[in-house]
Image 1 (tube, protein in one colour):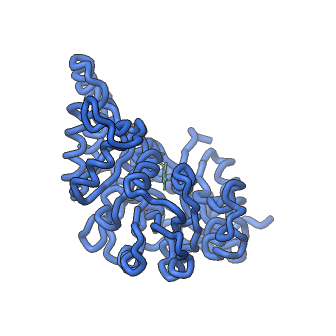
Image 2: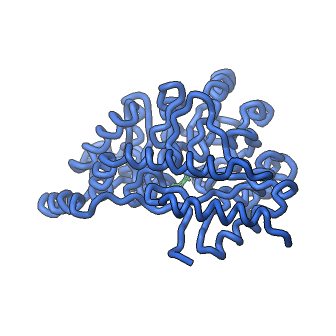
Length: 374
Ligand SMILES: Cc1ncc(COP(=O)(O)O)c(C=O)c1O
């Protein structure tokens, strides 16, 4: 049956290269608090990602919570139900009411055409997600935000190095939030960041993630502890050395899947948007039961029989979890596209260590299953 293949496997650099950093950390005894590697990584990421300011965090969720604090967002925020639950939880942790809006059928991102009707006098911001690394329609979202005086915070946790027509997607919106969790294209074990565009905002974020300390004796705000430590930062510096190769490998895998899955009736791979440079963080496919002959859940279970563990990201929708399903915007039938995609999607394994034999094996199981009569 072979060893289990999970939806992802973290990319890890050679251990002996990390040991050089560890030795240095041991000698310096500087483990955290804006240490040498933290400072180096902020600079290196700004260069690599072509953004002006980055504030490193211990994880993406605390970065989301802090981004909302930094812009003093209150009241209601318009967001997508098709994401990892942390997107909406970050609103809850700030006492903000999430207002869910349906997604687009091609990008699976929040549908800008449906945002305006969800705006109320309490709306202060939009929190879209570039889901699976597909950029949102940033121009249309900007136009709506400008017209109604709303802030835009992008959840860019799936979006490492993604560009639209040569422009980094992280430069759109007031802030973008990243995750460097083990499951992501670029990982620091756990980690995260906020991208900002001016020095004052960067400073406010940096104060907020460090208990509100401005200097040794001055506390300027009720901050939290969300700092990235030196071990994570060292890991991040080392990962940057290998990131281009890792993304290139993901691109090849996505191409192989596209090729091997292209002629299956009822199975749809997500097509690339024009002019986008991707990071290939996920490989979602949709299973249309009427044409494929089996449900998405049956495909998921069939793969499991062969020790292949796809994931039904993002099912259930965030709006279907008990804590959110009582909201008006979460009522069944209000988000038909999101409901349909959540019922059909399965993300297939994609990570740099996945080899061609494994890809052919996964696609072979899906082909055979499509042909199998009950
Ligand atoms: C879209 C999205 N937002 C937020 C998060 C939270 O990030 P973290 O796990 O680094 O806290 C994740 C994933 O983990 C995510 O996929």
